[in-house]
Length: 277
Image (cartoon, rainbow, N blue to C red):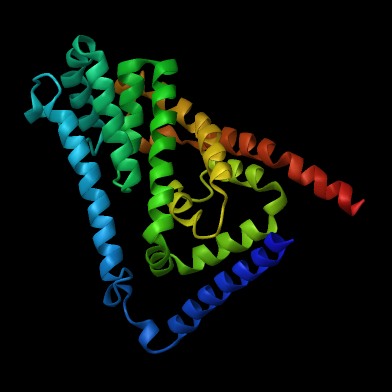
C-alpha cells in the first residue's frame, strides 16, 4: 500500500522537475546555449572523474601485465580500414595468448560502453573476425550488457543533471512512454533494445532516471542485444567485403530487427485488444 502511494508521488516529482526544465528553456536565460550551463556540480564532476580514473587504472593494469606485443600498432579503430589493419596485427597475438587477449578485449569493450566512447561496433566486428560467430556473440552480448549495467549505475549516481541538460525533450517522451507501459515494461524495453528506435546510449543513461527497474533493464539488455550482436559479429567474418558500417544495417536487416521487435511487444498488443473487447 505504501509503495502504491509513493510511486505516483515519485512520478509527480519527476514530472515537476521535467516541467521546470521546459519552463527554464522558454525563459530568456534558458534560450542560451547549453554549453553556457554545465550540468554537473563539483562533487558530481569529482565522482565521475574518480570512477573514470578507477576504470582507467584497472584497464592499464590489465594491459601492462599482458605478454609483450606490438603495442605501437594497437589503436581503437575508427573506420573499416583501421579495423582490417587491427585484425591483422592481433590475429597471431590472439592465437598465442587467448586468455590474456580475451581479458584485454573484454576490459576495453566494457570501458568504452561504460563511458560512452564511440567505437563499440568495431569491437563487435572484431569479435566476429577473431572469435567466430558463437564465441563472438557470447563475448559481445556479455561485454555490452556489463558495460550498459555500469553505465546504468553511473547514471543513477550522477546522470540526472547531465541527461536533462542534453536531451530534455527526449527524456520527457521516454518517461511518458515508460509510464504508459509499466504493466508490460519488459516487452517494451526488449522492443527498444532490438530495434534502433532509440539509441542504446540514451537508454543506458535515461533508464535509471525514469525509474526503470534494474532487473527489467538487465534482462531486456541481455536478451534484446542478441539479434544485433549476431548481425554485427557475422558481418565480421567477411570484414574484407565491408566498405562502411552503414552496410551492416540495410533495409532488409532493419526490417528483420523491427519484425523481431514487433514479436516482443505482441503480448502487450493482444492484452490491450482483449481489454477493449
